[in-house]
Image (cartoon, rainbow, N blue to C red; front, side, top):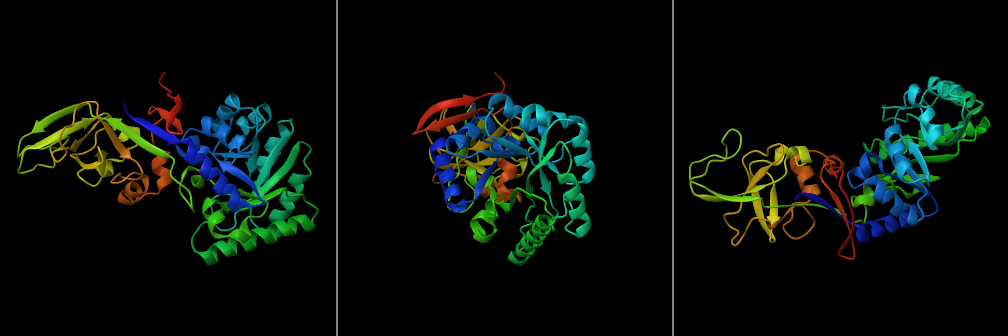
Length: 365
């Protein structure tokens, strides 16, 4: 039926490409949102086998899920952890992001040794300590707390322009320099994500944090995921009849329509309806007709002969005529990450190596 296919050979290539770009800097692989939809539990092990020792996730729940399946490596929760969940950091051996002194005080009161990364707001204006003397004094107080060890300090580029990025970098390094002059050991300094890794060699510092680059979106890497399905029904729609909800896409000629067993709840955007997107079957394009439903959709196969129920369909791929994740993102006005991470967990992930299936995950079985 419908499945994601993950090419582990391409993934290996991308990992080595990231390491080549990072040079002497340590690499933190960002595997939040189930590795952007690619399967974090599987890919974390693969990354570790290539020498990656640091992993970034969004919240404590993601960290706990991964730690239950893989006990090695360092995990950093990049987002917010509520005080009532902070004790899990020590229980599961993960580091937390701290962006206020109050957070640090709450974590210190847990009474267990805890590693943290300090988050600075250098211009993205989302989370983080300020970059003035008052903020530096607060961070210095955190550094003296009995149960807390500062493992790193970081910020996030807004990617507005090169000038904006350079300004953020300068603000960041000025603040870390101020802290070091106050005797604060800030640990690993990191500000570069995968985009900055490819653009700004001078910003690598002690650590870089690529995410999408591992999955094939960035400088010199290859997409590793394709979405496949199959035909479950073929029928004729007479001229003048509409298709799907609202009976849209009426045509002045008879059509042969194939029904496919996926919809927008599987992560294929409804915005691709009515010919704004297509699938490929036997290397030929078949446009969507009508609106995508929650669990099914229809495509026009009138120009593709010899098809039958069970034939494979490429929803998103990288072959000739395939509709790529990048094209779909452009058609919907979103970024690629929102599409790959939006593929539902009910869609099995099937992993291939040297063209052969080596593993699969299916959360419904």
